[in-house]
Length: 328
Figure 1 (cartoon, rainbow, N blue to C red):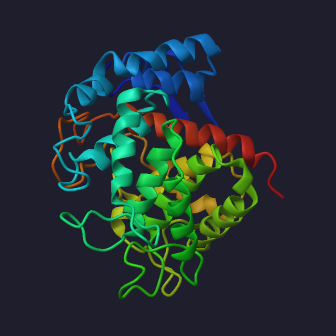
Figure 2 (figure 1 turned 90 degrees about the horizontal axis):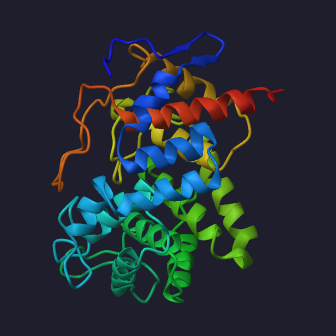
Figure 3 (figure 1 turned 30 degrees about the vertical axis):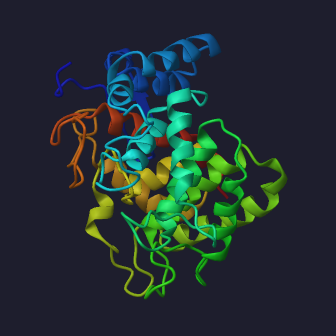
């Protein structure tokens, strides 16, 4: 499909029109794109969604990553270093692809990540990282919650997340060191982990919801990308359209989190939504760049139409149109 072909038009009021060509383009992509398009945009039948999800481990990016797994269950024979080919980063990509939750190879890898559990509930791997970093702990909690496994060690990580919350109600990877304020990056990682944990630990739901609300408020108080002190953009990199995002924060990934939990309307989303709309090019959204680091392979190339970015934007706008109807 040619990038210049007009597929979607977003008007000033936020409504948009869609054509079959857009869906055809998304559905001609990787199984992970097809699965998430059917689930999040087309509202396909349960059977169609299930069948397309099955293909993630059979062909495409999911199969490529699973084929690179070592016989001991790791990737690159390490837990977290190097970025982004070690076990933690690869399992995170597989989770975000939508690999089935009961995939035994992924479960084996997720269990290995719990080897880094320390006495205080944080995760570290002494030969790779010394300190119990909240960001790493959150990614491990997300992986071990998403992939169906039973292990009490996961509870300890949750307690660590509670203990490491900052005074401004967000989180910072370097919480035990010099950090005084929460980090956008770490707060979003924790929120994603709590979302996954809430789906497997119903007895903790009230506390999880409280933590999520507080973390969400931290991001919303910044309008998702603004400094509280200066009201200027906190970091220009937050505006980049990037996938995979790994541990990095960006406005689109934050909006994608909020749509994934069907967050109600809040006027503080407006500026972020407007920024995303402005990035449309000929009905599509382009990949700006790739984060620096090692990778097993390139999913999509920068400065070209991106199925990942377009999919994420489309489901964010779908959610936004729905919740905007109920604004006060």
